[in-house]
Image (cartoon, rainbow, N blue to C red):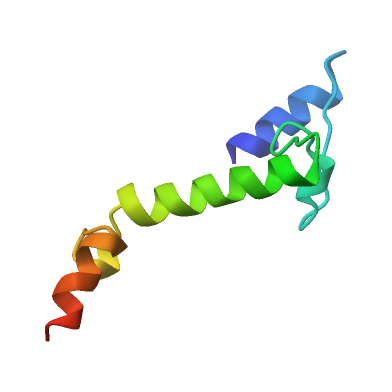
Length: 75
């Protein structure tokens, strides 16, 4: 509802609006901008390690995967 109101407002103002096609995140250059493939690989690995070491998951009882695995292996 709010987005419809903003879209209508943009039609009648000099501001304008830019749409991204559904399923096309590459059209938004501010989401992921890498200078080289190596940089992208390093960033992805850093994210993976952070997600697995510091991010609690509700499906694991709000533990990180690294904290969940040792208890799971002992059962």
